[in-house]
Amino acid sequence: MLSLTQPRLIFFEQDPDVLRRRFSRYLAYATLFALTSVGVAKSATDASPGNADLGPSSHHGRTVKLINYFVDRYHYRNTRLDDALSSTILDRYLRSLDSNRSYFLAQDIDAFEALRYRLDDHLNDYEVEPFFDLFNTYRRRVLERTHFALALLDRPFDFSVDEYYRFDRTEAPWAVDQAELDDLWRRRVKNDYLILKLEGKAHEQIISTLDQRYQQLERRTLQITNQDVFQTLVNAYVSAIEPHTGYFSPRATENFKIRMSLSLEGIGAVLQMQSEFTVVQRVVPGGPAELEGTLRAGDRIIGVGQGADEVIVDVIGWRLDDVVDLIRGPKGSTVRLRISPDPQTGNTDSRILAITRDQIKL
Figure (tube, rainbow, N blue to C red):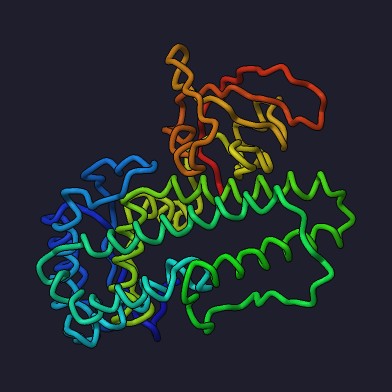
């Protein structure tokens, strides 16, 4: 929320001229209210997720230049982008990636120390490549851990050994080497198994649940885009100035506007991810989906098409927000959904629904 007692500066990615005009217009109110620019213009497509290392888009440097400009001229805290701030930025960025110290090795952290008093220089030169290099190391470590965890499920656990697993590792030392991290994850997977065992689940059910859990972690990691990384690094930067300052990517901006307006244009269904499927959690009362009459909680959306005759795109394995982007649309337009019923119903026949989008009050 915006507050009179705690000013908040929120950066939205937008055309530079529009930003300058808006900030000039709102500058007179900056001492009383939050300083906020409104609107969004997506200037480049997010880099596709996958196994390849991620790097910045061409517009990211320009966005950093604008953020530097506004921080220097409009932020109520007159903070210099110097070595001291650089050190805080690095700590915040590492915390945002691996807050529980479960992926990075001590040798990784030692290597990152070379950036501690240099990130300010990179940001002053509008360079974000070092942040992406750090993220790519993080992603490799996460994938190493998921592969290790999945391999552990093929072997029996020894429950006769008296040992424990530490849940909160926010202040724990970083694992010194691969062997220590392997042992940490062996205990973590063993603990995950025991929790499900105490819930009364059978061995086969436990293994299946954990297999899906670790594969989902791997899938989510591979679905991270360069825009996600950029939002994380910029928030590490601006929150280091003060914690109530934030940056919204184009997608986050759109969601913010929806929350502020308490309305959106779509079909009126709350969705969630279950494994690789987009699943209907609930249907919003009075919305288009409820009026259509056949969409049910538990239904899986496996394809989305626009209008009456556009090709239905297979969305199995997609990120939830990408599926939502396809389903949302202007009031009065039509979206077609290919639905696979909840497996618990015993019905395996898919069907296609045509729903006319409308305004949904939240």
